[in-house]
Image (cartoon, rainbow, N blue to C red; front, side):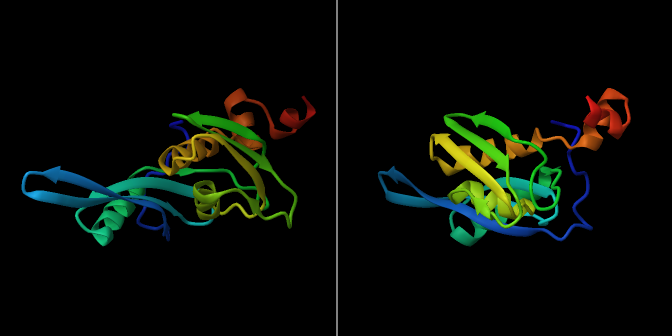
Length: 170
C-alpha cells in the first residue's frame, strides 16, 4: 500500500536486524566462487519498518547492502499500546502469515523471521502463526505485507470521510 510509505530516513533512528544469511556457490572451470546474500530488517521500534536484500562476496558487505536497501523502502505501521489494532492475514509466495493482537504481557508469540520483523516494528504483544513455506525471504515479505495492510481507526475514518466516533458506532 502506498499510503503508509515513509519518505525521509535522515531524522529516524533505525536499528537493523539480520534475519538470514545464505552462502551461494558458483562452480566454474576455475573452481568455486562463494557469495553471500543477507536479508535484513530495519525498524525504529515505534511503527516504522523496512526490509532489504544484500548480495556480496563478503558477509559484512552483504549485510551493509541489505541495510541500505531496507532504508529505501520503509513503511509506517499503526502500533497501539504495544500491539496491532486488528488481526491480519497475508500471503507471499508459499508463505502465509496470520497476525493477531494480544493483551499486555503476552509477549511476541512468533517464530524466527516473523519475530525479527515484529520486534523491529515495535510490537511487544502479538500472536502470530506462519503456515506453508518457512523460507525466511517469503516470511519477511509476507509479514511486512500483513503489517502494511493494517489500518487504525483514524485511517479508516479518514478514508470514509467520517468522524472517529462513527467508526466505532457502526
